[in-house]
Image (cartoon, rainbow, N blue to C red; front, side, top):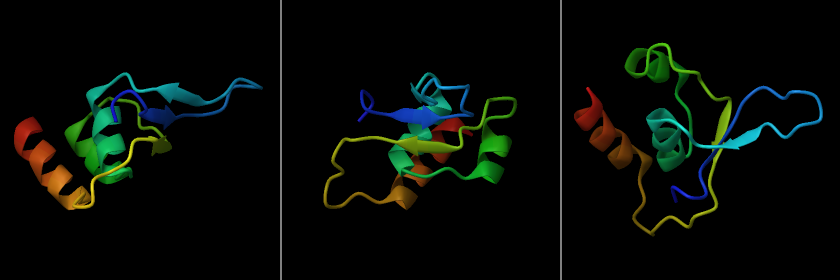
Length: 77
């Protein structure tokens, strides 16, 4: 999952705007497969907010973004 995680920012001309993850917050949002802007500003102050995230890894059958969120919040706060 970490290898395939990409974040999307603002497009610059003809260059692709998808980039490999480079921050903990990018990985968090790839794990959840969504972005929560309010929570991002609260937990990652001053860190660039991507507009979208994507990954091509396959989640297990019991994947749950709420479980992922509770785990990273417990460890990052």
